[in-house]
Amino acid sequence: MNCTEDKLYESSAFTSTFFVVIYSLLFIIGLPENIAACFYLLYNKANKRLTEVKIYMINLTLADLMFVVFLPVWVDYYNNGRNWRLSDRACGFLGSLFYINTYSTLCFLSLISFTRYLAVSRPLRTAQSKQVIRAVILTAVIWTGTVGSSINILIRSSNHTNKRQDNKTSCFEDYCSEDESVRLRLLIIHSIMVLTFVVTFGVVIANYSLILRKLLIDKVALRLPQGKLKKRASRMVLMVLVIYSLCFLPYHMIQLPWVLFVLNFWKPEDDTCRKSFNDVHHVTLGLMCINCVLDPIVYCFLTKDFRRYLREWMGYLRNNCVLKRQKSQTIHS
Image (cartoon, rainbow, N blue to C red):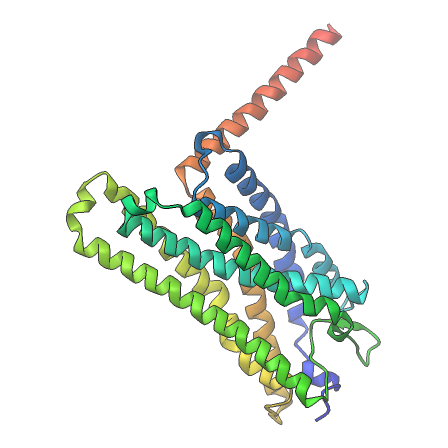
């Protein structure tokens, strides 16, 4: 089968509607959510101290915000029947943002869980270590790695748009190439992506297991003030585990079989099987994007400190409105 045939990438009609709905909701909820999280992490007067976890959280929020702000472009794309109306370069840029967000998020989530483990198992040593320097170095490595890996997408932007038989242009929905070396390179790239997920997921599971083991062994600590910190840390890692399982696991389970299928390494004859694979891939892709909404909820919104910050901020806005109203009434009277 020739890889240029449209039926190789054919999906059910519901998938376009699915993306329009989920991306619209993610933009409406995720944009104010991540902006609020950014303000909280950067300008919270009650907690100005820069810590290792805070650095990772700031970068995690920025990665999510960078992805969310461009979601309306994808809404337009799917709302117009998967027709890309911008330039090839724009397709490459926005597609690269998807990969940068996904894999920087995976790295930051695993680092946060590891830092939580250190805080639980070695609180004194962690407090005395040069953790901020370590965080800055690791953050620089993550951004350099994810952005650097995406440069090739920008350089080869024209490879990611394809004119279909219905005269519409797709963006990042096929890997049309008859060149064996190109197909093999794409397979290797996607294998590395899946491996990145497996490694970071393994780190999260290991940290959660170690924290749980520490809590079970040190039962006396649960009656001490430090016990609250340990419980909160274990709950945080557990929530990260939920994010991995809900958002990232389904996508990466289907990713390699789907890539083998679209690159024509695996050739199922049944068109229904092909369409089903595309449908499942699209649904898991949408589920993975939900992480940009869940991240700020887990790391900011559920904390007492954030709720206090939000009340203070709302009080400040309310007082400002009252003062302006009083001033306006004084002027008109």
